[in-house]
Length: 179
Image (cartoon, rainbow, N blue to C red; front, side):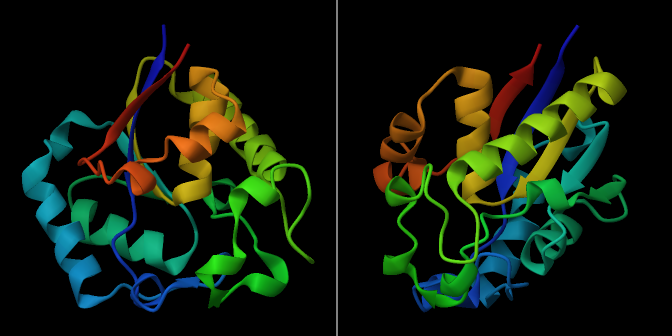
């Protein structure tokens, strides 16, 4: 069997608007981010999911609640956190260049390979405990890119280069499968 994942990114935050990289800081949804999370209920059939996982960072928790609360159980998991930008958490987003930190950690933080390791552990856990289920995930950019590396066989360079944020190709959820 397999686990089907529909991946959602959290709504727009105040830091997004101010071009700051939130990293491991909680983050606050902007008015637009709240609206995006509420409207998502109308863009997808939330009843198709068996359960919802989200990052334990506040912006993802809030997004998940606005979309799923009262309909689906929401489980917070710290393995779904954004990359820890270390000294760059909360700083200008021009400092958080993923392509420069695939193997080299951000000062006092993580690198993309660290995020990949966390997501591999999460995928193994999901496969062992939720085989045959359809789960929703509400999280961040780096974990989504890690899923593309782990589940789609992309290199980090390919995942970063083809990221929907660069190609301006947002959609209400991305489908992945853990076999």
